[in-house]
Image 1 (cartoon, rainbow, N blue to C red):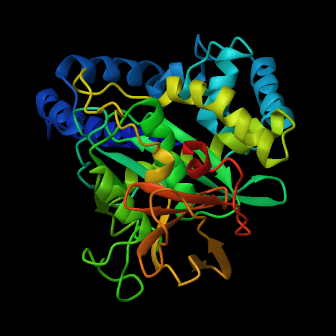
Image 2 (cartoon, rainbow, N blue to C red):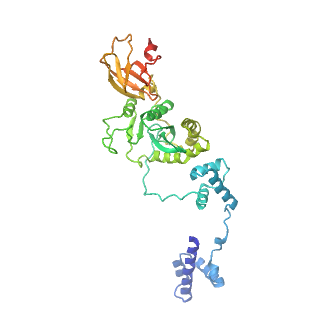
Length: 394
C-alpha cells in the first residue's frame, strides 16, 4: 500500500472517531472539523457520504483513476529499451539530451529519470551532504582560470590524463587534451593554447601538484619563495597563481570533470575512437564546441579581462624549462648527459666561463641563451640543428 492510501485510511479512522463524538453531542461540528483539519462544509459533506454509504463513501475515488497524462506502456518500454540497448553507460542528463535531440523526445527530464529508476536501469542519487555556500564566480572572463588533470579510463582498457583549462566566469573550456601523464609540459600546453586564442589572463587556480607548487611536506602548505619551473614561467608572464587546498575548494573544476567523465567516454565509444590522436582531434573539433554550448554559463559582465599577446618573442620561449649552466673552456654546456657545443660566431670569440640558460621545449629540443640572444638550437640528443637562429642570422 502506498503512502497516499495509508494516509487516507488514517483520515477515515479519525473521522469515524470524531463522528461518534459528534453523535453523542460531545463535540460540535465546528470542533470536530477543527480537529480533523478541514472546514465545517467539508465535515458535513463527509458526514452525509458516511451516513449514506459507510466508509466506502469516504474513499477518494480519484486514486483508482488513471492520470490523463500517464504515458502508454509502449512508450515506457520503448524508452527503457532505448537506454538499455544504446545508452547503457550514459548518465541520465546525457541520455536526456540524446532523447530530445536524436529521438524526438517530448517528455520532461523528471519523467525520464523516474522511468529509468522505476525500471532499475539507473540508481537513485545519494542524499546530499550539509549545506555549503557557493563561491561567487569571477565577473569577467579571463580574471581567473582553473587548470587540472583527471586520470580516467576514457576508452576501454586505457587510462589517460585529461588536462582541462577553463574559465571561472562562465565554465567555458578553452583547452582540453589527452596525455599519457600530467606534468609541467602538459600544463604549459594548456596555458599556451589559451594565450594564443584569447590572450594573457589574470590568475590561474590549481591544485598543489608538484609541477605547480613546492611543498616542504606532502600535503602541506606551499612554499611561495621556492617556485617550480611552471611557477617561474607564470611569474614572468604576470599571471598570479592561486593554490587550492582541498577538492571542495576546487569544486567548480571537480564538478566539470564529473560531467566530462559521465559523457566523454560514451561519445568516444559511439564514434569508435580508441587511440589518443583521434580522441584529441574529436575532442577539439566535435565534443568541446557542443559541450561549451550546452554547459557554458553567462558571465555577469560582457567585457573581458584578457590582454592580447603582443610580445615579439614566441610563447614557446616563455613556456619551457629554463636551467642555468656554466660554459666550459671547450665552449660546451652539459645538460642531461649531453654536451651541447656552442659554435664560434662574430659576436664573441669564446663563451668560456659565462653563465648561460638552457631551455628545454615540449618536443625535447634544446636551446642555449645568453641574455636574450640565442647561441644555438639542438635536438633532444644534443646535436646542433642546421637551421638554428645563430646560422640564420649569419
